[in-house]
Image (cartoon, rainbow, N blue to C red; front, side):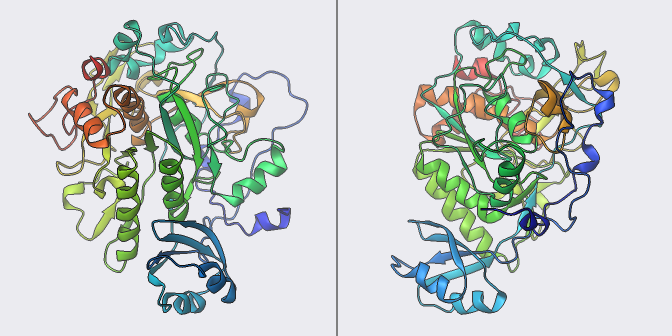
Length: 469
């Protein structure tokens, strides 16, 4: 049983608190009591200093006993020879690393989500489910992003996704009770790898599945890929989602949880995995991280899972990042997605100007970017955002607990799920073949910028209609 005292020491980052909206700016219905929220939290990040990733040599039958003898616990272990252990000190980790059964050992680290939204950029949302015609969603007029990728043309042809295809959302969780997500999330395969969040769910939302989203990011991302389309349209309306919580309530994403989440998704039948997260680390001295990434992603590819990753929001040239491993775009066999947005707009309903302009924040690079997709940007009159659902269990935007709300955001985090939704349609056509899925998405993209391969667009901005037709 998790205790309240434990929460004090979890080290959950408060870096996103400044973005939480003020309730008096948002029209809400009556509530019986104030929604739970956080006004003060430790600022030292999610503490994973006692956790280590371990690469094992061959089949090790007594590994758990070795770890326990050193005072630790095996938190996760996979047949490909990767384990995550906790409760270790630097000294006991070194002892474990000296074992003949251990190839490599690497201390865990935490990456951060990088979403952006302005205080007060949250709106109420109401509508009637329209999975057969997403254009009738009540806020569809705000969705320049869906029209930019020609998703509406595919819907008109009846391509709405298949429940037999699954997209794993590796993120902060997913609000499976949000109206546009009811029935879309397979809870039997959903999982949380964040015990710290599990403790908070027990306190604030007892009885809910631990995958429930205490942030908003995972819900926003998941609903962009697949939505019942009563408030906002998703790229698909029928595709199944799998929630895999690897990022905490305040956006910290432990590396070990990400590795475990990818392996879980691959082993539980995910056809596509969306990773709107990333992190940079110095390659020198971090060979362990790169090795774990390569082993895990190769395994996922061999299992037939296509992985879509966001390029990152640091405006960095990934062709010249030197000794830095930047996000997961440096990983082979992924689809790396940059962000586009309008350059001007008259308001949320448009009209918009040049929806395919590269954003000022997106990472770029000929060798890294495969395709581009709408990520949004804050331009005049609240135009240019990517709108999606706000989790009804959000602790960083407590207003969202009091009704059905949508939130406008921008970032390459918002770009990736457009491509994941498209990838789920392509899987219907070519099967669980990640290389074919990637090639078809690139071939169907609208070639923009530099002809052939552009540092900002890759092979182009994705075109759902051209790709699947």
